[in-house]
Image (cartoon, rainbow, N blue to C red; front, side):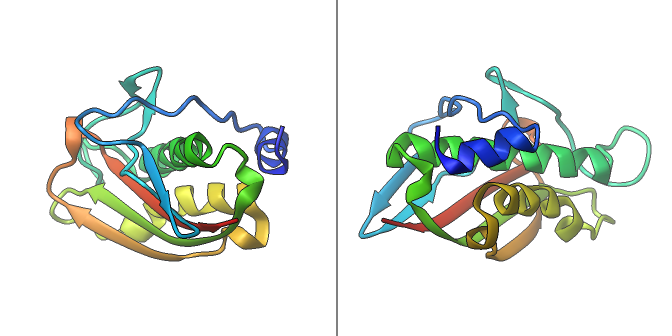
Length: 156
């Protein structure tokens, strides 16, 4: 078990198998010391763990729940990285995290939602998990997911 996986386990987080792509793409690729993941949805066991738009009000995914789903996206992204790197201890730095939040028109808390993913990268990679980030509100995401996360890392 890698040090990264041990840190996740110690925090009570379980690294899943990488989710199967929902279209024609691969979960992650690597080139010239950089690995890129595809956008990862909050899938668990092949099913969305939550669906809908994020916001305040009836029928919407709460920001707290969306934060939890962003953390699940991050775990799926780490699993995708493991699928191409073999050993997560090869990650030298999380460079960039891009998160998309399917937002109700009045919702402006995308950064708070994406903190769920950033926290997971910090737990997993320690100081190497500190990253640049974009948090983007969008009208809709694949499968009606509330959040999607992609990550770029430098590796050995």
